[in-house]
Image (cartoon, rainbow, N blue to C red; front, top):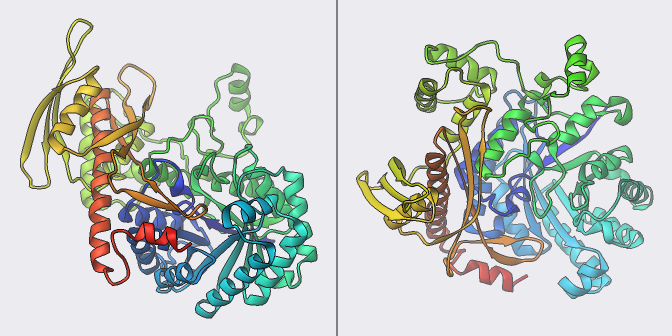
Length: 555
């Protein structure tokens, strides 16, 4: 069977989700997991966007690019950098990825009339010329060049044939057809891929790729329609995260291909047993909660409550399951863990859950949390353990650490919080504050200590398991307030935007979970500032603090 290449853009398009900002270390951890998952190409970022993004892509290329252990393909993951169709972007992308043994430049330019007229303010002839120049320059630097005609789903097919033909002449090796705004239906998109492959000069010399968005809920269906019509690369994100309604979900496409081989007659290099671990890692780091009814990785994906379904499952699992939980890394627990369980049993269980690469310090921290939880709960479930791992391991560096918190509240009292934090100086810092509720009071007290101005954009709290003794998982999103310089750069619009930062926390006490989530988000914000300052200092010859404005002006 043909192999469909999996091009993962979680670290680039996925990070453009509101609140999904990642620091360099988090991107490295996700990139390593994507390599273990078997991803063929990792779009590690948009290097021109900021010094921090450049550094993240460069380190992924250097540290993750050479890895081959456990990969079905036997080849290291290709590291790609995104670039708009201009020489500055392309050079910056190449400088970031060139240290990887396998590297790619991915450049793009819009081709729909609405984008040409209103965004780029150029005509079709200028578009063709710009594409030719950009791809030619990219190919002079790198043998692996991908070109994407942005908003291809709303572009004139005959004009696409012209543009793509010139891109092939200029040296493109992969042509990616994006449904940038999620506009097309599967029948339309499948027809478009077939038409372009049949009519573009030199079509047989390149790999055809598809990149779909989920604005109408059709991203996975459109992607699979592209595969059925000859696409041999799919551009996806873990959990389907991305701008607006998100991107095509990696796990949905991969499992559809694996579950229905008679429909697609292709295969992938993905190790599907790594899917659940990857999903949970991305969710924890980005703060993007996976909806319970999400296909493949949602909490309810393999749950059966209706009596007739349960009866069928007991008789034969295939009556209501078209795939086994084990194929995506959900293994049935063979151990019941409680307060008498030891370190060996705990380690065995977390390895069964897919966490095989924790170092001694991470394992010790997780085990201590497990023992504290086991003193409060009779039985610790897999979901509890995964929440512990997310809270202890998938967290930003602790610039500020929660040492102690005490709350006083009630229907006839003013909510009051006393907080003790350990600061970057290693000293304890204490303060207290009033609030409209216990969580607000805790946040006000933390703000009095740290003094970082921000605005709470989103707050959610969920029970990890059933029962009154369940752990709570809190997820929040904050933004810098009143002109604080925390920016990202949107490659499609070339406009700077204020970044937001997510945080995650877990505890049997919902106020403690909320405080941990808030500190997690604040630590991300502070780490991002330090990261940008240090990288700007290192790259001072090429970058200034005002580089976002300069980059936007030069588009």
